[in-house]
Length: 277
Ligand code: SAH
Image (cartoon, rainbow, N blue to C red):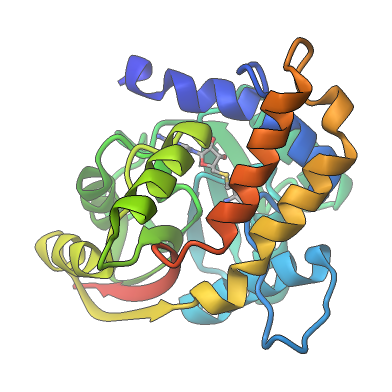
């Protein structure tokens, strides 16, 4: 599987051509995920909005004190630490970036939570954990990078105990897809090293097939779409450092694409919860 994931690893290691993930860490601060706004009138800054998306997942997961939670694609560990603090749980985070493992461990140690939040390099396609070893699991914007979403859901079902909860936030494809929408989705997939974008219907099928019930899927596209515009503005501020050797025209087209993606209806976003049977 290593080869399947190498592009994604490079993206998060910041060694790919755009080095966007590394820059995002500087620009964005703590969370490597979208923000959530209650309404058009909600003017929360990006940091508060990304924490709010984490909080949505925290409530959806419903973990109890002492639970053992798996964070699939943990990024730099910030969402996991927020969950530990909010719910007094123990978290194990996995990522395919050694840089992120080191960042997350440092962050946990600095917060005095090194024994509650542990991070390791592991591929979600083949999780190094025994059956039924977690009470809950979440995946915040990581499923889109998986070579096989169904297989990762099967792995998740395997390591969750019966009755264990699952929460996922993921970019999705919203049909019907026009040719123009398809072009934008294809561009998004290439730029962000996305393996696939699922539809709501595909998620329902995968979850049912791999032993999940009580599935609730929410289309929260309207609450998160502003993120793309903010990202484009942020990238604009660092345009000169974006990639050595990238022409101004190329930088313009990257930024224009980000703005277009943010207003493309087919570029959707979902939040789901489910229970392992
Ligand atoms: N959940 C974090 C990070 C999102 S970025 C947050 O919300 O801030 C996507 C994450 O998925 C990265 O940490 C990346 O390393 C991880 N990831 C991608 N493919 C993976 C795989 N096959 N196995 C484990 N983690 C993976």
